[in-house]
Length: 566
Image (cartoon, rainbow, N blue to C red; front, top):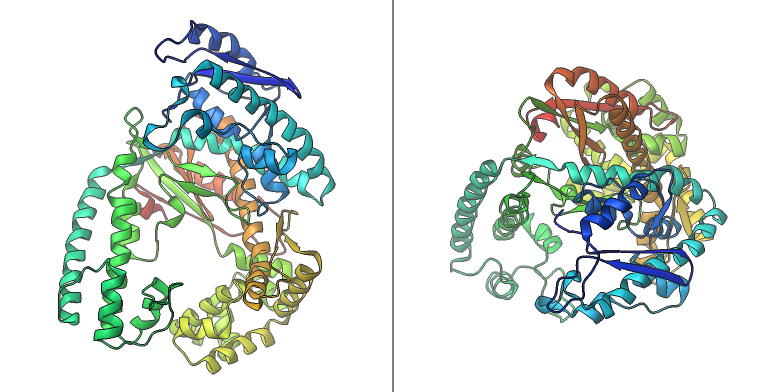
């Protein structure tokens, strides 16, 4: 959001590129063209949608040019996105890595000309003799990468369509969302931060009391001594160096039986919320816009899901009161409301579609509460007799199985014997045989092909699927089961975002704007007078983003803040 253009590099044929500098301002820098004059001449070209542009991570370029009142249009190709769609797991998707992998070339790295760490120079401070070749090489490499990557997309399954219809059109959508940002109430967060600090101090006191001595709750070494030497707790796992582990999964296990690990876990979770969100979010408010501008990443997750940073919106916990409190700080502008719309149980609906299981399809078609319906089947009771505990167990089974959870994992989650958990799973597959068949088929297909696909043809390669190491192989099998569902859900919400953004820009540019995307949820900021109309149109477009064998159900709430609307 702060960056400015100091020069422009471009290439129109491989092996030839140029760099036009205009913002290098180090001591003794040669005279350069005037920035405003160059950008004024480039503006019609950059804003012309008919003049097609190829770039590497053009979302960034679009955001930086916006700081100079230039709206980049005509994004025709993006090599980072091409690489990601081609193979999301083979390597990183930065230019240096791609040049090495696809062109066999070592590029000039930024560090080699600008230095490292605190002393690293910014681009405007770089000597033109160094900046010129670096910048020109960037343009040349981008063009050549495109010439290699684009034909490969056309050769592999439906990847060309995934790129052209989903991931590439999303680039300008994400850019506009980043530029809009979201409004955050800093005072709410500061109050919350204070309360977290007070609760953490209470937990620390309690922990000291239980342990019978004062110690540093954040010190693994001190925890090891107290847990394993003083209290004699069982050693569940060791660190690579052979010391007893105090990692979170170990503490979760110990917390079933012992008070101190439970206190430590709660303290850690509050500490993380405080450092990651309540203390940090106010610092991320941009001085010019008064908003927080998260960065969305298209080329990070293996499955096609978006991730975000500064702040990471995807990791705000929603099941705890403390997590919901953080969402209360995300507010609507005066005279506006937030609409939060999310897909209900989308991955289970995709499972019903992919597996074609009659029981699941019927439950969704009837509009039944799927967890209730599963509970009735697994526990052999009538639908109206399902208890809240049975529904909770069925929910764990439904979601556990699509993530490839074992009987052991389910037993842990439900706090039942492994034998009982296995009975639940067996009964589930008896009632939903199509799901079992689908899982067996997808496992076999993954072993044969080395990859799985989403409904739209996005591929996830599984390099460990035939590994000799059984653990690695089983982890790859679990991914093989889940990735088509998670990836299809990601594809659907991307298609919905493209459709919703196009609709808002053409019909409601002054009344509504999409500001956030989190997992299966879209958040819009809407003028109060238009809330009902926008809500209706949003539900219609999100539920129509894909045609499945079961309805795509979208729930949309309205509120002054994100928590209210969710």
